[in-house]
Image (cartoon, rainbow, N blue to C red; front, side):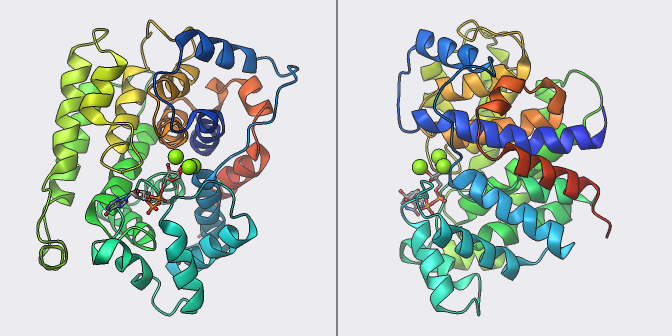
Length: 344
Ligand code: R7I
Ligand code: MG
Ligand code: MG
Ligand code: MG
């Protein structure tokens, strides 16, 4: 499979997770039959249904992608400016409750120090929401041929514009590395345990505190992502014998980064194989459907799982009908092609 298909799959996959998951955001215990008919009906492009709009997840992803395409390099102030411009142009995309204060402060400060407003959030500990992880896909694509430390550094900087808490930016790093591994994987099947082991060895390095972090955040919650990844292994080993509440109790379905990024990774890996309640043979569709079935932060967990699945399966596996019913597909498609063809 070629890289263009994987880049398109990644960005469109995330967009569709966002659009198709958004109507259920905040719900729990969504009925199986409601979801099966929702997804299977959307496979028909000629069906007349209300258009599915994208939310903040995709709005911010587009800001990062378009900045990389236009600047041909990582330019954090430009990214911050695009976030702010986008937010004030379309504020009703369902942004997190606190991140909007960062946009206001960035604008008021004239972007002098783009990391300062985020560092003041939550009494100076910074946000650990999943907002930095949900928009990280373009960074993973842009750095796919760079060494891992470059991926980590760029992910962290892009995250810290809004998410200064180490759980916030480390969630973005984990999501970026998961996308990259799915993108670079050769072959039809991924060994889930090997995939998770690689992520654990990366996060063991990432979650080691630096001196600066010990001073800033009082050395709370060490190795949170490594232990969540261990829980993924445990769930995967149980195979079919895992209920929705097992997943939610063990990994979460929340708007926090530690309560959603590992969940999205588990969803992608689990959905390689059939899942009883999810009626489809298409593994991309199964990923999105299973993510939404977990409830909670459905748009964001489906978007992150969709980014990873799209990077793995490529755009050919994405149902036409889904693309037809969602906002912004053409734009995301163009950004993916521009990113893959970037001449730098
Ligand atoms: O992380 P963020 O951009 O929100 C993303 C979510 C996604 O589900 C989107 O689809 C959208 O719906 O919102 O925005 P933030 O406002 O930084 O974080 C989201 C929420 O996480 C906050 O409003 C808080 O409720 C919670 N949160 C915290 N709560 C207590 N202490 C984040 N950090 C903290 C914290 O340090
Ligand atoms: Mg959203
Ligand atoms: Mg929302
Ligand atoms: Mg959300």
